[in-house]
Image (cartoon, rainbow, N blue to C red; front, top):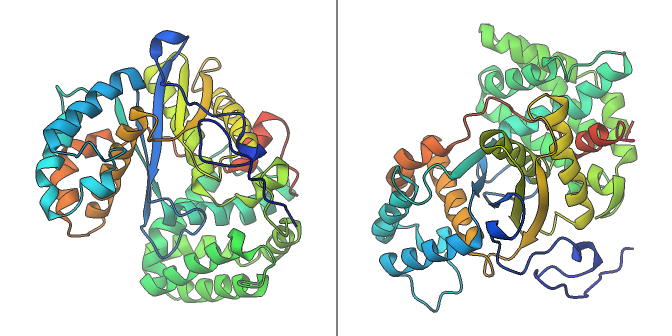
Length: 398
């Protein structure tokens, strides 16, 4: 059994040696070194439990340091009537509900053209349905094709297969059938299933087989695309068995197996992707301050820092190393993280509104938030094991 380490660390509420290095307690300031600071926070994050909650996870980023953010937060507090006793400004607590319309208008003015955060804030949206479809392709089909000597990653075939399954699957299987497929895949790959007691290989293979049998009977052309992917997936029992064998039996927060343990956690994929997108948009060196999350140990941040650069170089998106620093912090200590929380929360509300939820929050903010959604056509399907593979060699999970 892994023993808990309760040693405190300065600059974070996370305990133990796994969170001892990459902490930032002092205010960020663009004047104190090379590179500009970018604050990043999430909304709608439930770890690798990608079924049953919000369909979307959001990462909000703001290219701002604490020195400038402090003045903006103070003004926001005053104009929005947020009590001084509140330790920090939080979107979910202070900007939702029918009575917070005035506060949302003030936030919209900050983000709109002419506002202090205009052209500095960005919203990165993860569709969890697509993410799960991409992981089925990545962890099962890609492994199968790789063993046969075919690369379906670099040529975009794997991505297209995931898109076909995610976009056409609901029509091919019906909403309930597609929901069953996604729920079973999440249950099989999730950390809760380390011992394989909740969703077995038999369970997963049965659902993939039955999904294929149902989809192939549908006459619509869209159904055929999903049926073709399911036809390939139903033959991946050996790959599913290998994944089940090699997965660690208990939590492994560091090292190679720690990465495999988080293979379907979207935060591990999203953080380096957002860093790369911000670098492509703004150029130059970046220093990134992320809101603290227990998932992101020092070792994992080491890998993601290297991976963010490696992926950009491999794909020819950047010319050189673009990341100067990647650290964590507490939002109560960093007003820049509080602004990132507002951006992420607003992005989540608007995503839910676009998904059909009748909520005045999304309706109030959609016009200013929609332009913030990252327009970059790049969709990074790589998981943590792929970052490690690009950075060094192919991850040893085969």
